[in-house]
Amino acid sequence: MNEFNAVNPEILLEITKVKMPFGKFKGTILFDIPVFYLEWFKKKGFPPGKLGMQLATVYEIKLNGLEDLIYNLENNKLKLK
Image (cartoon, rainbow, N blue to C red; front, side, top):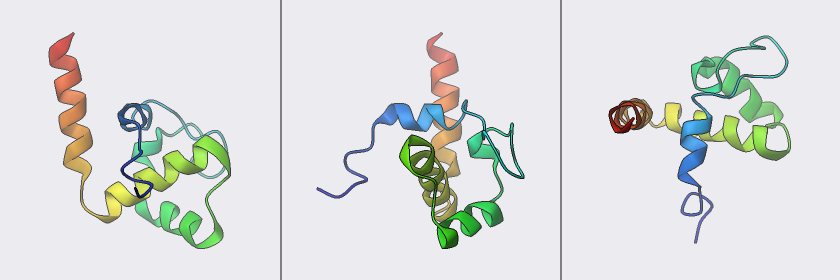
């Protein structure tokens, strides 16, 4: 099993709510962080722990053009309320 098979779907919702706690984009929702900043983290190393995993997830989503997954997830969650 690779690491993406083990990803908790809640992580996808979290990256649309959690804000960056430091740096140039402090206060920005993780999913809204620009790709160039995520690429910088990829080169320098993502922070340890959950934040690093969340940023790496956003990076992979944006790198692979999968943003619609997040938009669809958010839209479906709104319909269920």
